[in-house]
Picture (cartoon, rainbow, N blue to C red):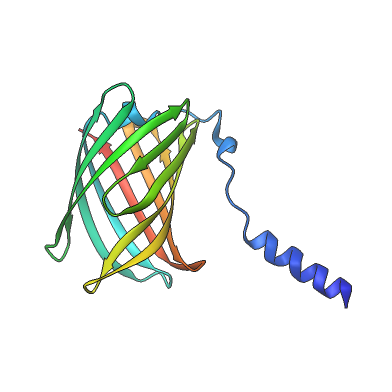
Length: 173
């Protein structure tokens, strides 16, 4: 019986491993958040539910300003159903590769760490669904590729249950 329990614990723990940011330390081009998002950026994205069904698509216009300590990201979203949304991030560079940020719909602070061409950004967000706000967790992974293409994959969960995935592609303008 002890062996069965041990095997179950090992199987469960192996399913919940988190990607290690340091794995990307030598990858190029290097992602420096405040440099990438200074100025104008355009993005396009999709939300797929946990079953892989496309639920929504959107585009985003982003204006970023870096003052040496804070990166302000002014984001204007336009969804495929015509809905518009605005989010303004205030992101502080804590140290080399470490960031903390806030926005009106973020609960507490978002925390991020970058290494090489990658950034992991985690936070809780009050997401409006059918007129109600629900608190969900976002686990974003951003990867910078050649020619300034940045791809973001964000897993959304509540109570540890995957609700879906947002995929966004960014291009500097």
